[in-house]
Length: 373
Image 1 (cartoon, helix red, strand yellow):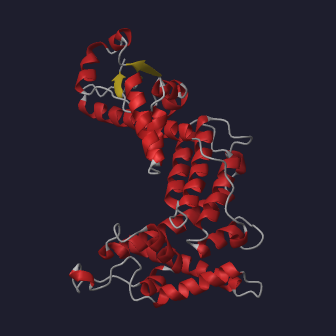
Image 2: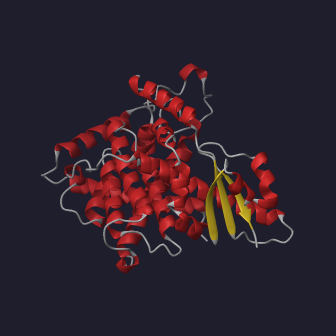
């Protein structure tokens, strides 16, 4: 069985071979100005003795001379140009430790090659395994919205890769569509590959041009394809999707934990999800907070999520609108969204009622009670 290091070397070598092939394309007489600028940029990176994050080998004696980490030029030669460019784009002086650069670069090599392999698997797969028609289910709409959000974020922070965010969104979508979910939507999967490739073009040009021309069979270099078009993301839908999957994770973790600690080792069949909606005064206070941040231009996407969570009956509507999805992804037979302020609803917990006191729900964080037969 191949060792992890051997696997890494094979993937690293493949990435370097891809870069060599793409550079041969760029030698064509019709090379664009964008491709020429990439070459100049790489040449500049190769010549730097230290990383462009404001530290050097002897910067304020922060790192002892015994600490060994590659310069950008060494990283390009050892880990590939795209892995080096990705690392530069994805980190800053405050978030990177030079002692972990080798580990970071190795991780990026694995991510890029695994994405290439995923695209190859999708293109080689039986196309009947994908659903056709317009995206319609909640997972469809949520995944499409996440792509729109990635495009918008990249427009704002054009130097920061949205690569991992989109990969996580894709994996979550695949999980949501599996186990009887009918499979992923063909239109959305192909759009994902298009958007992911275009957004990575300024950061990993060799990777992007290879996927664009060699795998997706597009005409011309990806540099000429332009920035992907996308409507404004629906932050209501984004917040609902985040909340929904947090609830599903909460249920599955609790089911696993409860099963281990019960002598009978019974499997839960029903779930009561108690939510504590924000009252009028709490919503108004949150609205004022978000509006103040908007006025000061310091409002973040996280603030916007909280803003939409302030709408009345938000949590109950998300859960009730996705009961079938929750049951499918948790294996439960019955799921109910209940108000923590409704006495009749509290009575449904029976002898487990005390758990609502041990861990009471609060806005955005429900309490889950599992019942067995």
